[in-house]
Image 1: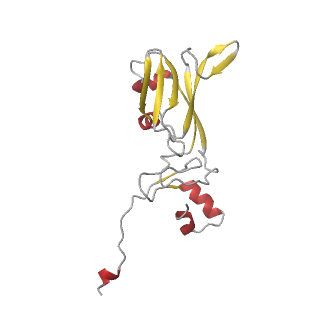
Image 2: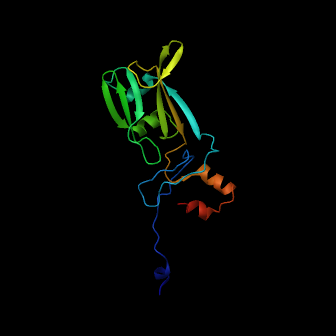
Length: 171
C-alpha cells in the first residue's frame, strides 16, 4: 500500500463567507452550502435602511415613466431578492436584483422596499397607489451575499462556547 493509496480523496470547495446573513444564510447551489439559521443579531449592520430617489434607479427603469413601486419579485428560501418588479406609469419590468443591490450599495439582498409618496393631509403615504413615488426606502438585514459562513454569526457562536467543528457542521 503506497502513501498515495492511504490518503483520503479530497476535493477543493469554494469556501464562501460574508459579514452577516441577517438571521438566515442562503443555499449556494452546492451541496455543502446549505441554508442555516444564523446567530448574527449583534452584527453592526444586522438591520439597515437606505432611501433612494427615482433618479438613482434610472439605470434600471428606462421607458417605465414615473416610478410607482419597486418590490422583490422572486425571493430565495432565506428571504433574499433574486429579482425585482418595477412598476412605472408606462409599464412594468422584472429585473435581476443583484445589479441594483450592487449599484445602490445596498448591504445585502435581504430587503423590503416601501414607496414614499408626497404628503397628503399632512402625512406621508407609504404603499401602493397611482401617485408617483418621491423616494424608495430599502429596509434590510445582513451584509453580504448570504452564502456560506456568516463571520458575525460564527463569532457569536464561538463567544457563547461553540467549538469550531460544531460551528462549521451546523445543520
